[in-house]
Image 1: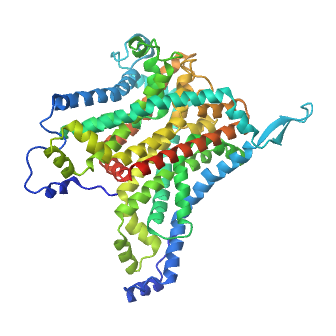
Image 2: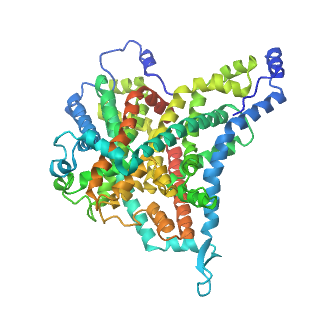
Image 3: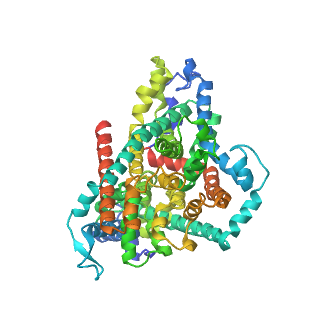
Length: 314
Length: 304
């Protein structure tokens, strides 16, 4: 980190002309240089750890390893253009993983965000003294690492250890119940975090608007539906974007559950599929292609949600 | 854009400051205080009981763990469990604790400083490529880390830095969302007039940032530090992909590796559970103690 010492030149320039003509071009350029210097470390990190890897993955996704001749020469890199992408999208395992994530998102997103919104509204009308305690308690799971959250719930689901398999009407580690179990783990972890975001947004709703509504005879539920919820819509959309991205990259919970149940396959979600392609099949081309498809899908989906939110709040 | 302070609200309605607090009218039975608190209590129990289970289980011996009920108390065995935990495999757990602290502590401080500087520059200084950088940052926010981890691995293996500290540490420093937050903080917390005044007094741009801008963005910066700490502490996928040497593992990866053995070797159960407790406690404490900081920070970042 270099710190530019103030030169006499800037000092004089600043002192003599407080009027309109003061920012001389030289000063403006210095400001530009300082901006570059402050932004450079992050810009370099972004290039080195996001842009270049994506570019490299794209390059790799265009090649595949083939055994040449009788295989005595070892594998050779062969340019195959978009064949890897075609192999991924026509792979039944990949499609099944997309199906799993879609089903997961369909249940998790409304449940988690709806729960967070309901809790935020309840908190907004709770006694002031207890607010802090309730919100902290519900927020705490966010502080638990995903792996640990996964392990805690996996134990709670396990037949001889936890109480849940005896209480639940389905087997939480069985083939049909495991998706609900994953939904529960993620909901447990993220509901409080989103509740705090919604609650903070609710606190910013102008009180006079609510008072006016009350004078007009609107009850608490009516107030929530026609004033509070519409006014925190932008926060809700931001939360939605992050939840959508999070859903697409679902990885930790299923990976942890894999050691407790056979119901989670090695390609259960797209992220697991990518992991399998690279580390188990050693098929870098296919893994890179699937990785990029996942990144593109996330960016597109989030852009779509953002676009929707911009249109709605206009 | 900005958060209106609730305190100035009553002035807007002169002559009406009745006892009726908005949002809590005379109320139907449905929304009575009792129901509200019952529902909140239910949510709190759902959130906290698994953690209670974790604590309770880590105080049990292995025999009690499989024979006593999940929330049933048994003989106090926590100290023995902790002793076993730190003795396992020549004290590898201590190395994991150290690694987690190093990755998360150093990564959070350095990463937050980098984010804050960049966010401040984007918000307050005009420089070539500013818009492009912000657009690239937003893309970075939207592309999930899991989708990036494998490209990163492929690149790192090309550069032959897989299975080193740097392979995990450098990517974790990159926090596009932190830059996004820092830009929002700089816009709302650092008035242009103050910067102009500092310039009038002859402070260079970088000094203005360090002595004027950064202190004004303090609560935002603390929030970024805290959330980046949590993000790195909780990160699992990147270390899983990059590391094979157990001595470099962070706690999450180490505990996961032990947990994958429990189905064959039940003696790993107490290690996994007690280790999990130790991976959770520091963060829970940090959030309880720093409540005021992260609450205001979250508020400034999310209400936009």
